[in-house]
Structure formats: C-alpha cells, structure tokens
Length: 145
Image (cartoon, rainbow, N blue to C red):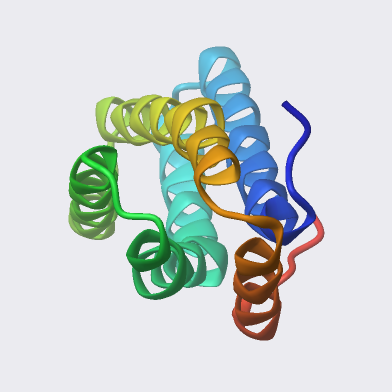
C-alpha cells in the first residue's frame, strides 16, 4: 500500500535508520578494529540523539495514542530496548552491541512500516490522518544523510 502523506515524515526517518544499518554493517564487516567500532558506536549514538529520540517521541505522543492496537506495546518496548542499547554503547562500545542495535532497529522499522503503518492507514479516515500529519509535521526533525 502506498504510504499516506501524513506518515511520510516518519517513513523518511525510517529510511534514514535503515540506511544507517546498512552502512554500519558494511563498514564493520570490512573493518572490525577497535577504532572503527568506536567510530560507528559514536555514529549510532549521534543517529539516536539527532533523529531517533524525535521519532520515538512523535510516535509515542501523537501516533500511537491515535491508533492504539496490541502491536503498540511491542513497538514501545522496542523503543526502550534501543534506548538501552545506546546507553550500553555509550559506556562500552563493542561490535556485538552495534550489531544488536542495527538488527533490532532494522526489525523494528520493518514492523512499523509493514504492519503498524499499514494498519493505521486502514483504520483511520482521511481527515484523521491529515490531522495527525499536521501534528507530525510540526514536531518532525528532518535530517539529510
């Protein structure tokens, strides 16, 4: 299903998250040395601070309350898991932690795009989606990779 215009800003953030995962995994496969691991841990932390905090906040304060469904509990729990992984990366950067972060982020994004967003578009009428889109637009941070 084509993405509703109101959800496009969040889908753009998802795209950035997936791109980060691909770039990090490729870079770390070719060089898993300590310096590169520390550099990619820093990039993961930066990506979290710059875009994911904003993304999670919009979903949890605007989107999830507007379209509650059982999947929301899982998505929020995954937000907390990703936050926890970032906290651990701040303390002890490691290849396994970065790979755990990218794997969870990738799965999480796919679930939101393929299951939650699809359901939201079927559940909410056009006017409600437009209203949510205005609220999302007001809060979203746009980042160019």
